[in-house]
Length: 101
Image 1 (tube, one colour):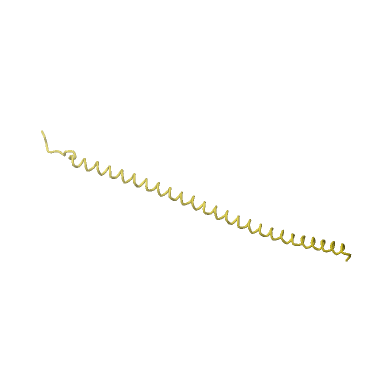
Image 2 (cartoon, rainbow, N blue to C red):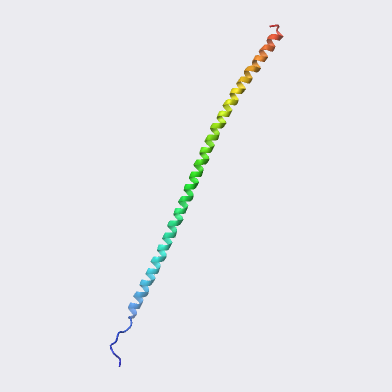
């Protein structure tokens, strides 16, 4: 009673199914890898953007400090000029007194 009932899949069909399953698994793995790479790239870009922002803030801070320092030095220079003028006047007065003026 070997009848003509349905037989199982042929050897070629089994191989084709295995190949299709393997291809689907590889495609899924590639998709996951691509998603991870994209996430890493986003993180890297964010870190880089943060570093650029910090560098700009540091540059701005340094420029403000230079401006403040330049202003202080200018004020000190003005003070030194006033001191130098008063010292010269005192020397002139002393010289005039020593010569009888």
